[in-house]
Length: 172
Figure 1 (spheres, rainbow, N blue to C red):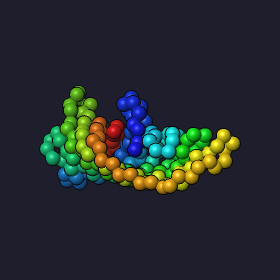
Figure 2 (tube, rainbow, N blue to C red):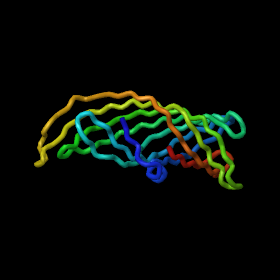
Figure 3 (cartoon, rainbow, N blue to C red):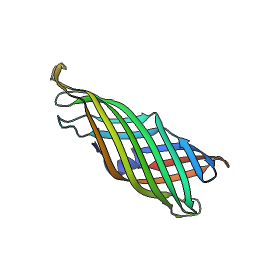
Figure 4 (cartoon, one colour):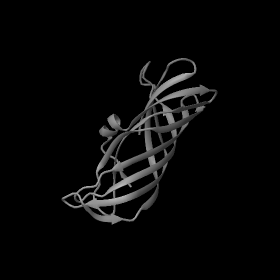
């Protein structure tokens, strides 16, 4: 299971920017995502990971003037190094979420979207080992899988580049 850090950290670190294409009531796009994650491992402490993830996809569906649904698919693939009393492992995660968002018009040019919705994660942890003080293999642990369902929150802000392309920034 992932431990999320302070909300302030998320605002600066767990952001994604998307270039979206608009068509009718649907908007879709792809984006890089910056993440800062840590793993709760039953066999010991782990290192943390902060990295730019290569793949994320978003689909938006307009419900009413100031409300919409946002579906996201994220794929994370990263490695946590092993060390003295730290379990190293390869982590692959697929995350799918659906958010109901409402737009808040805070000023003429600042109209962010805020949303809440379910988040589904499927995690695979492989090559799980720890090392001794000299860097030699100490223990090898069996692979494990985890599926979690949770409640997520998201804040979004978009800029229209032209009639068919927008640029967005999301914090979740």
